[in-house]
Image (cartoon, rainbow, N blue to C red; front, side, top):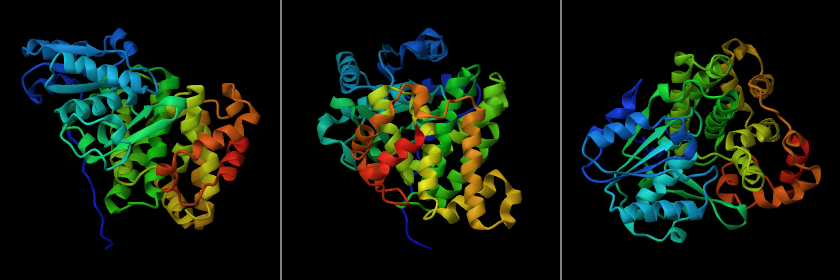
Length: 381
């Protein structure tokens, strides 16, 4: 067997209502609670906040996190935590609050400078105790050592280090029940892309990441449309949340690649939701990769349709791409760049921006050069 390294992720609490158990998992002292205004306004955090306060802790709420959080937002959260001398951090919400919480816990605990951390393995200090609670089934941020922040020029930059892996994650499906169809669809497709790209990553792919990726794809593809059509279906919501977490564990160890690299400029320049950006580029990047990744795509096709095992690998790979594209459209997402106000002649700019994501592009089964990226954006238009 080829040697490999696998980071197993945070300790996990899973089940309805278990988010209030965080009071038993955090140390005494003030807590920095990182979330966003929508989550706060919908009352999703009320139970956890009440439980933390009932435990005798003072809770310092920072709810100013926006989509694609900026450096300024992150540093404001850190300053808020520093003012209250917090002893632990909770990230509560989608990927943006969780990413801010991860880096805030690290910066508060280590005292390091943010600009010394961009990249892989450069955060080597000690963070504050950290718990993460997702309220969408998509990003898998609660499982990963990665945090992505938008810096000057709308560029997305990442910190990837085991030091960012949370102590605890909580999968409470009740927090995801009733979410709007568009949000359910976009976050679900995001998680599916995590699973597919982890399975085909040319760096650090290993038997455990493969195991998680396959099971994640089975859960996500089998429940996405149910969750979209029946937003109160708790079984489907629970399966989606677990699938997103498993996909997070997969890509935490076998990094994502071309779909994400080409999705990031769509979010940075046009502020499209991250999952939607992935959905827009999914079919085109998979087709571009199909020659090199044919056998792996065929294996994933068998997860979606076990009966296709008798077909040749090329037919199975084509089936995977077709089935995933059908999921995108059946979920209700508009699958073309033009549907979202993006002009055809923006392709060269988007391609140039995508080339800044070399940390992701190096994981793709096929090299994507700038001219390739331009043609992929044109195909997606």
